[in-house]
Image (cartoon, rainbow, N blue to C red; front, top):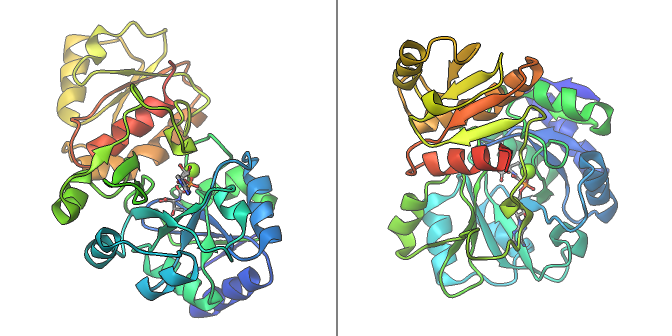
Length: 328
Ligand code: TXA
Ligand code: MG
């Protein structure tokens, strides 16, 4: 494994590696992805193996221009076209009918494919250098926290990846919003970096998958996913003071206001307090989420106690990841 600085030479090198069937971890605006040529079944199989990922979990195909969608997708309904025009490049993944030529391994046998055009210039430069659509799941072992730095990828996947293109920390920090466009009404399968409000502004009605009433059809909807090894308990906003943590536990507050209330009202309840965003900005909270959880997981705390964010904008994606990381 080699970590590459993002020079033109190294991007070309990584592009050639992808053409020859190797795996490259690439930075995107959301999280690092583990990329392979989407049309190379052996390379795609190596992605599953590197992640120890069950083969039933389909991958997202990344493209660099809207026109390339036709290489992997068989038809694009008008609403999907509008979303592509309005919100791509960006953290929005669309589920659309797949082209037959795309290997079934990429979509785990589903007739649909997940496709996205990342906002990261570096990701698009790599896709262009390879000249290929790239199948890339998040570059973490299956079920564990997603990586938001090259170091996260290196420590989690090590020699199972050929190159890591180092683009620094990912600015958004949570995965893309996955939107199923194959039904009558667009359906959010996974809340993520693109706020549902922004999608609704383009297409009008949007349904949100509700795990209370529906069966999961995509592993991004599984109850336990993106989880740290340290037990994590999730409580309502402002309720950390009512928690009954084990001695030595750490509290993950939303903002510094909440942290101050907790430290003055319940001094000593937690051994350590941290917050996701000093100023209470959900965008910033999303950007810090996985990095903070990686650090806390390495810190040897017996438990992590976290509070929910307001359920709006990126707060929805952060709450979804905290819930999936939590003990049920
Ligand atoms: O931001 C992201 O989306 C990152 C970066 C690397 O692009 N990628 C990512 O990929 O999070 P991954 O594989 O960790 O998550 C893909 C999600 C999974 O929940 C998967 O089940 C769902 O997309 N998915 C993929 N193809 C699907 C399909 N055909 N139908 C329904 N869900 C699908
Ligand atoms: Mg993932």
